[in-house]
Image (cartoon, rainbow, N blue to C red; front, top):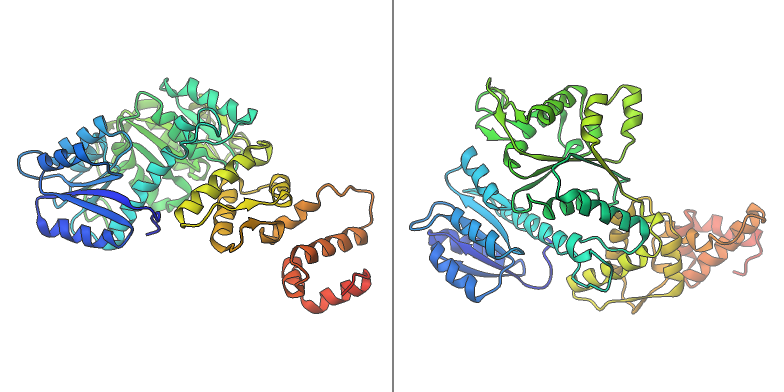
Length: 449
């Protein structure tokens, strides 16, 4: 589990001492500071005097239920996350737990890996909501966790403000890595359903044969492998918001079922004849042209119109101007803190290269690049040579178009050699050629060896 280097404060509440000690022992080695309580009254007293990032609580306890503790945390500690654990799993219990405000739901006995994954997932969602606390970065960062001050981003922020308070279905469109889920979360957490569950579903990441069961749930014995009755994502999101990412990846048959949910506000569990009413706000997203897919006959037109009540286009990073610098500064500070390293400076050439690069992976790609730079760089400054090799050509983007290909190649090789301080092995690696080919080109273009 890749938790932050700074200590994470966690309160574990369970009437069974062995369970408390097991969780404490497993998480203490993960940069976590663990406090424990044997019941809810003791937990409430601890919460009054200490600050925590996360509460892990059992449901069935003497005197006061763990669900009451979840509701208390949600009402009084907005930034704190909650995970429910229980030895008595049921659909009703799961739905009630997440409605009360729990971020995740673990069934005893759970493995160490399941515990770590649940904790990391909850803390990641917390970091997403509190992505930036520096008011100077840009307006609305505190509310939405989106960093930038470009006009294209401001248009998105204004649309979020207008959309959050109304129950209409929203369709978010944008390239991969632009932050579509972040926009969906901003709409949910700034609207009247903020206290209820936000359930993200990657429609493209779930095998076709399992998607219906995952979305709508199933009864025990309804199909081979259905060893227990399980609630679907729509039931878990009841009262809140479901985010259907990669909606374009659903089959025509599944699109018919989703259309029914939008029209009738009800779902059918697999193996059950009666329908169940759900009160769910639907936000969908795609990185593809849905209208084009409608024309090709691979996406239902009626579903498209149902989803496209409010459409929010997310601008690619290359169209957001100086937001690249703001995001670079934010990610550099974030990962320096996470890995216990000083915040590094970027040279003027590196900044120019970052700004001129086309960023096909958008904000997600930028974050990954900065994270890698913070991890591997040992110096005090990041220069062009430290950037990924595929970005180096962007440093030459202003060279013009009135030169021959040979002239451009020669200049590019000179720049690469300069950036790698004459290291020919490294230069050949950046250029994607072997040392023999590099020597031939040095001779051909009369570049000093």
